[in-house]
Image: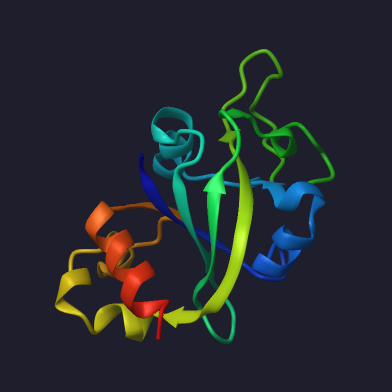
Length: 154
């Protein structure tokens, strides 16, 4: 089993939106970074754990728990001329962008970046690295365990 931190702007899709969706499941559309796309395409597996992270908002941080709910498949927004994620260079028979569905499991209190930076046990988290701008980052099993058993339990 793998673990991930996946960023979403709450005005696009919040943990509340995901929980309210049919079967609490949403497609993770709009990823346009190759490394994040490759994580979804090549490494994510059904039921992998996900920290649902709110970004670009008043209070960024982990806002909920989720899991990977599908195999990867082509992101339909790349073909939609009305979408801000439209990619004119992509052909339907050769899609470039991939997504997975995410099933929201529960809303949590916000665990902010400053709270993630405090414990030495989380010092190597990719999301905490200077200059990191990835929308999806792997989380180690020990980081997952620390956050779920200590930071989300208080």
